[in-house]
Image (cartoon, rainbow, N blue to C red; front, side):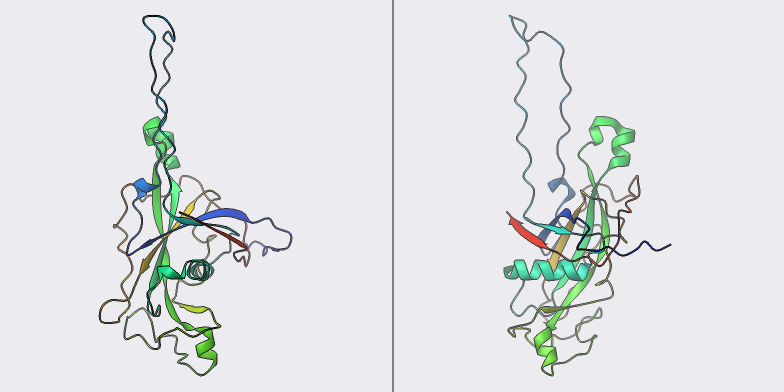
Length: 240
């Protein structure tokens, strides 16, 4: 049975970190934190006292956007958010740029079976990719409205997409995939690889799932169904 849609006026959105990197995903080790060292019950004063080391500083996360959204947030919405908040990430013209997304989530199963050595580990799951097309204003004024002009097969870029007044068009079969469909759990991350067009103007292929995956790639140890609806991004903060 399909859950009822979320009423954005009455449902509280959750916090999401959207990471981004040019030409590739981040390594999973960029998100991992060291397991805490075991405690020592020996003397803390006197000639045999153990001088414990200060804990290492918290690991700084890669650059990211902090947003508030819902489980029904789509890759199209995340793409619009990223490209509007950080236009400098895109080449000029941006048409033909591919944005690849993947889910980053804790290795809860490993932590349960491997003990403290597995704490702080993360796994990754592919979400899909989208391609940036001409601005919507250009299409409304008679531009090429062919969905396949910048499609999965590549091809030549059409138009600069540099018009003023409209959002960049987000294309591709994965554009309407939602966080809900990926079994997103509040606290997970989303990582985006920004792939500019190739030298011949064609669209770059998606990132190989094996690239940038320092650890894991398995299934989550628990489901993540926490609501559904047509959510959009409400608030943005750039970190890093």
